[in-house]
Image 1 (cartoon, rainbow, N blue to C red):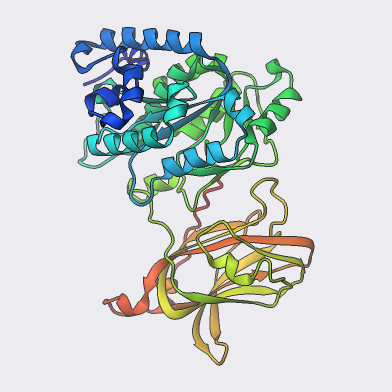
Image 2 (image 1 turned 180 degrees about the vertical axis):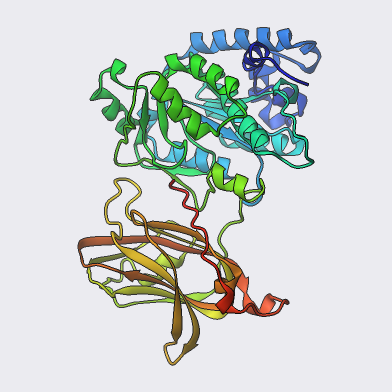
Length: 461
């Protein structure tokens, strides 16, 4: 079914706050939360798109009368394999903000997946964890019906780039339409991130330095559309813009083009960056390149030992660079040739390596010039790899590299090497690897002489 721009835009307001609490029969322990919405739309009320629209406008009016905040944090979320990134993101939002900051913000989540099992499970979990925030209007959950989305034709039986763009853009057009009058400013983040402490106060101080009419978009992250701040007054126009070009370009491109059309020609990057992807979050462009697959699993905990010739103390040991928690390795005054190497207990077939250095709050203490190498055939005690292959160089202290099978086979060492003298502190937050023990692989060995240049996908682009 095709959808005109006007119809699509009208559909963008067809959102019901926690409509699914009624339809999906939330258990009795959440009855108070259920009652918040039960009078604004039961299953029998939805006879047409106009019914959706009227109920939404009615509820929006009641929200606006109840509380209008300084900032709305907008998130769109879908189901994915592995841990629930949305729950982690909500935990980070509330744990890193003070009570006074929480009073200044409204968190708006668009549950943009039509899978009823995921919707019900997610709503039950969120309502049990954040009941008080929901009842006070600090946390709003919305869901758009599947038939509100425009159709995107594709001659082939596969997901097209236009379909992927369309879903992402329409999801966010719905989100922004609902957020229009909730607050003065709107912050767009993703559903798999963690936040710097007191991020609301940081944003408020940056906004305070600038006159309201001198900017359209402030960026508190350099990754995709994460951490983008807009005036709420611009959201209706932006939502309309996303619907006009929903299948033409990805969201991050349209945001920048929208900014330019409204007169802000250059990006305004606000440091320190306040939002970072949790573990790894593929950029939208990279997802399309690998066939619209689901988000990758978390890094594997392949057992290994970390060795280094850098200075360190007992407080932040080298092994803390190779953990899945938020601990880190700390050193200082490193020199060319210094290294930190993860030596695996067993050779492994790796398909990806990610390295993150520097503070997440202010961007300091990155490894300014460094590279990552894969090592093979360890010998001696302690073991040292006898040969290495360059995987890639760090860009602004970061690297996220997919690995060809030809060089990822039977890797025993992952080495982070320093390429230039550096005065001051160095923080290595983590080295994450994806792969499996080589002994689990049943296929034949690949000749390392046949490797091609591998592609470098950087989620900071």
